[in-house]
Amino acid sequence: MVIGKKVYRSSYNYFFKYAENIIGYNARTGILALLSDEDAELLQKHRDISGHDTNRLDELQSFGFVHEGDELSKIKDRFNARTNDENYIHLAIAPTLLCNFNCPYCYEKNVKTIGGMSEGVQESTLRYVESLLANKKKSISITWFGGEPLLEYETVVNMSNKFNDLVSCYKSEIDSLMIITNGVKINPTILHNLNEIGIKKIQISVDSKIFERPYKRGLIDRRGNPSIILKNIIDASKKIDRLFIRINTDGNNLKEVVDLISILQQYGLDQKARLAPITHYHEDICGKKIISFTEGLYGEKRLKKFSELERNIYSGLQPFEDYFSMLKPKNCFCGANSDEMIVVDPLGRIYRCWHSVGNPDEAIGTVFDGIKNNQIEKKWKSYDPFSNDDCINCKVLPLCMGGCTHPKLFVSQSAYTCESIKFQVSFYLDQLANLIPMIKPELF
Image (cartoon, rainbow, N blue to C red; front, side, top):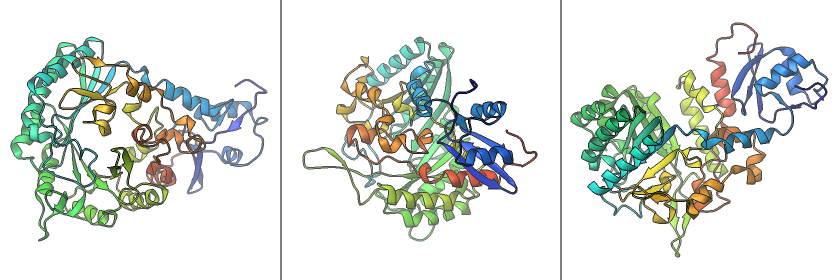
């Protein structure tokens, strides 16, 4: 730090007390620090800090608690550098958009007529991925989704094997192989074969207490016995390294979520569960995509209710690493905001976002011709969260980076995209305080 230069407290500081200590957290840097009484007082008082001990300010600046110049510009620089990781690609493939369920909130409800992936599209997808690997992509993660991907089980197995061969040939690595499924078609043979081809992560999505085909992916039947989904979750938990249970949550099932967690708890599965807020999309009379204000968790009032539910459920459940990961600053909201995310549909069209799949108007290219710098790709590349006053004035900006971009690009620029982290930072810090051993009063 240059002596005499103006120094300011960070806009992204949080403080909480644990025993006789004050812990500071900065959302821009993601650093947690056990502060001395003097530093804690300095950072929380509303007085000029430029004349404070220079060495101490230098250390506080290195942790992000104080800064020189425009602090927001540092977040902008990180966002603008988001595409610099040229070695990594995240590939999401939908081998079919057909599904054995008809969930009322599904964002693919209007494209479910698109069936399996032809051999020609499969081969072109493999050649496209090979071109990426030949272009020195060193690491790739692959996620199978749908529709219901296990309706095209053979495609998943055959292409996964070929991806493994390609990666080996180019001396790259598959960072992760994952499948997202409703779990109905899982059986011991499928679990064994998925393991054999390297699919070590499975996400099974549920949304209700009572199983009711084809609308509700429930955990129990009307007699209170485990549904086919819960039975398969139990089997998968014994055979798959990493199992995630996603509870799709909206205004219609908020009151059931506690019951779902209670059921999972009976089988030792509650810590594998994560809540996911759902936004309902509809089309107006002109075919334009609009957001339903009555069904989904749209708007601050409903998101606060969802956040409160998260706090009640997660309190004391998650390991240290999970809480800490929630407080890790982001370069951008998700891979769709960078060049790393590539989503492929059964017809070979390429998109930046899962929510676009099946909609040709939101495609950015094909596996036959590659990505084109069309108007949709330009939309994605030109977006940033810093034109939104609510975002740039929000203390949580470094943790969410404006929230989901898709509704802002394709529904409404004023779409409410705040994430539940907006109401959770203090909760996560309190949980961490109960897990961090207080050994000696120094920065860590």
